[in-house]
Length: 492
Image (cartoon, rainbow, N blue to C red):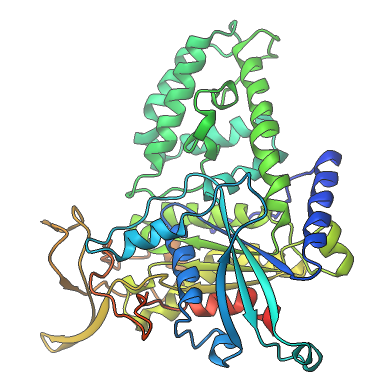
């Protein structure tokens, strides 16, 4: 059996200017929240996990006062209402909630585009507190700032504690794994053709950088679902496309590099990447979060096999190692804010029958066990969930050949395949997705796990119900549980 990877949590180092900047940002946040407190909720996810869908559904369910029985303030009738308000920070793009909702609810519903940059949105909650004194003062208010950022950016944070030599060693080790053989082949061939100690030139730099980026891109394809492949901004460059800070690759060196060598140039560019890309994100956004939810596509990893599952486990461990976690007191909340609650949620629970949801949550717990243990030791809470931000399927039970099968019913996306069948995106089917392995250790070993799982991507439902106000109802599974866990104690 393959050994489960366990990594010691190491917070990326912050220099003095980082800490001063973080403290000033937090003091500014505290000053603006004297009259109306603000909770900053980070939402991220690893490859294809559904961050945009989660945020859209969360906002819509709050705005439409949907039925969310596990969200205590709403279930008890204490939530007076919710409203989108303008965010005071005008430099960060606004999360395109209205467009994403339209994509999901129009006559030909489609999934919104994936997150490729940081965005934020502010929602104001008005509620009646359970606290006797606060309730005597009237209704209370809370701003929730939702910060949406690509999971690839989060996976860059461990690079802050790695030298170029260490980064290269780790990256080349990953590229040399048997499961990366096909995707990394061209990059490794290009690497062998170039002497790292030769005088630097832009042609060699472009060849190596482009082949490395192609390897990263190919490794994120559906069949592999590999996650732990930084630098993440190489895949989502934005306005930094083709900049020197994003034009390098890992290199090996047999002897000391001279200052004009390709190796030395890549080392300088790697340090520039950390300075101009990673540190500003860490300082201005990441270190200011109060709560965090990490969304993962565990079903895709399980379907891809043990290598992808081990990779997802490693990604979760590295991700949790980046958070500034622990319990807060009054002083730390103002000067050196820490994340005291982290939710890890396996999305697409609607792709399984509800009888498998508990086992899916157990698998997430197993994947994050070591990292969660360290987080709890630092004073933070970590909890696993199996959810569907928007439910795309229904359930039914059939008897076939005397055996009871728990089925899901939905419309697979166009191009999805199952055996020899390719779906057209129009026909609804009933599918037995299979049973999740009951032995948690078997998910890390292909030889020990011979259970065949059938996971397909489904389209959003076309005929959604309306509430009494004529607003669309977005059905969800346990989204209300994550909401209660993440913000419930702030609106007691």
